[in-house]
Image (tube, rainbow, N blue to C red; front, side):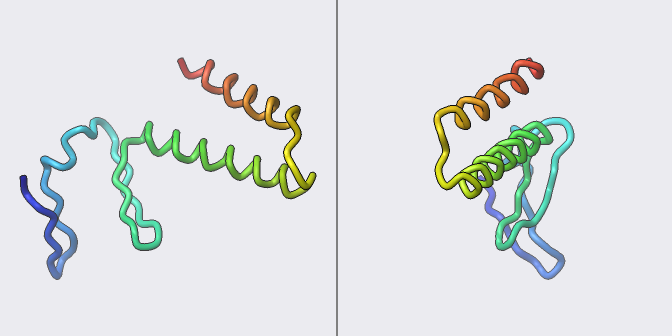
Length: 85
């Protein structure tokens, strides 16, 4: 298996490491991390981040999450997922 190599021009990534990625690929840098992922994975990761952000905002505003708030957020996510299947 080939290894990653860093050169003056940049980072060389062997194609064998990218084998499972098909279609469009998203490449972005976040802090000290380079993310290379499929568009589907990127969309799912962003959706999860938004859900966590909404849950944190709800917890911040009310002090603590109530079972009803949690149930509403879970239902909203399930509705979104049902539309994508």
